[in-house]
Length: 170
Image (cartoon, rainbow, N blue to C red; front, side, top):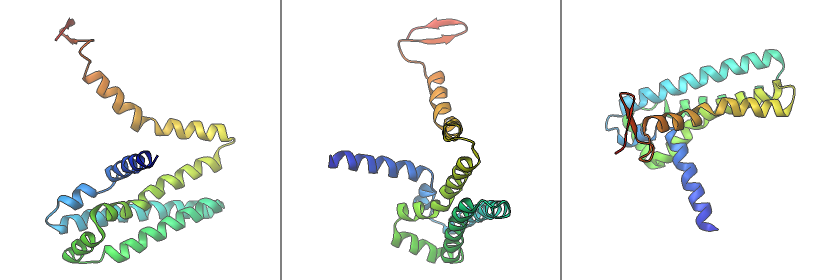
């Protein structure tokens, strides 16, 4: 059972790290570029969350307003703590915390944007079934399309490849 939990945690962490700037943090020697990229990413996140907050606050969606305010506060706090540091000091803090931990920490407000949007779908939907269907429909392209493209581009050995309209077995 412990091996199953460990494998699930490792898979989840690996998936989360693909959504983060982990590779950039780990491989960069010049943290000026890293700092610029992180500041651009954080500024974009803050802008999106401010817009959601403003629109929902004006319309009276208090749950979504509270969620967007929470993630906005996270993003602005991280920007204040890390966005104003000189590149060398930022590099030291990232190395102290750990590249993976810092990458996940910096990505939490970005994931918050998705959470706020999903909450918006639930509150705007006339029924729970419609909301779940819409969320599933929205979530499938990033999962289904790459699988289909890989299947089309790399035919199996049994299927063979089609060259010039003729099937060629290899």
